[in-house]
Image 1 (tube, rainbow, N blue to C red):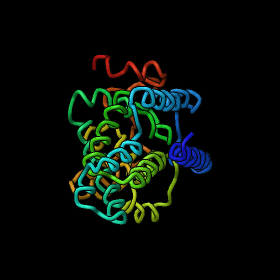
Image 2 (tube, rainbow, N blue to C red):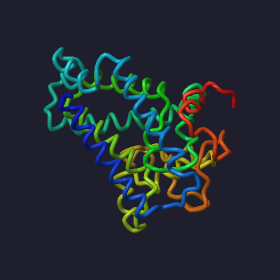
Image 3 (cartoon, rainbow, N blue to C red):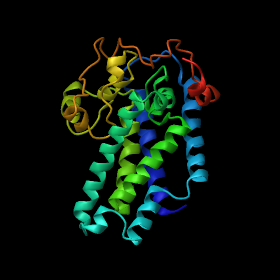
Image 4 (cartoon, one colour):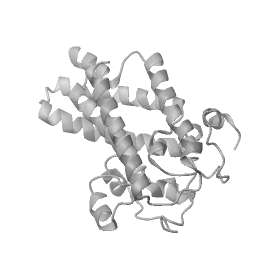
Length: 263
């Protein structure tokens, strides 16, 4: 295993462990559907997506960044941008693109068919943060690849972004209680679980808000920020608008086939 993969794996497993413990010790909401019914599919699709990406894509984002840099591709190479500027710009630009991609997957019907699988999880915990359809993962990777080449992004900037994205997606989907006075301050710097939980509401206007995964500023800047769900976090209903049955879509085969079903 190369050092990039090892770094990402260690941090991912560390975040998963920390969130699992936090959710157990201090949950934000009571869950109706037990973990043993949801977690095998939610974690299974992480394994499936990882294998498919390795098989279908010839390189990783970091590998592509090295290749682009070696061939002098992208804006940063053209303008000879120093590393101390290129790294934070890479993180900002890629995070903004992920925000735009997320909006796109909500408002383009074809993309929504795949993304809504993420929203049909009838509960909300750290495993939800990695519950994406394989086709959405592949599209997302191709979008990120395009940005990496266009920027000529430094490999270290891409690595930091990927680590941050995976860590914050695990964190902000956690069913963990964060003291409200801390949440009010932290959500100016980072997407918090309470902020992102609104996005998983069954109410359409709430689902179409709080698109950020890492940085919260894009939602505030573009008017897609919503502070709280109208029914409150303890009374709101979690899930997509096409899924009202809490037992729906919790198995791996159902998750894979879901975009191809009518409705």
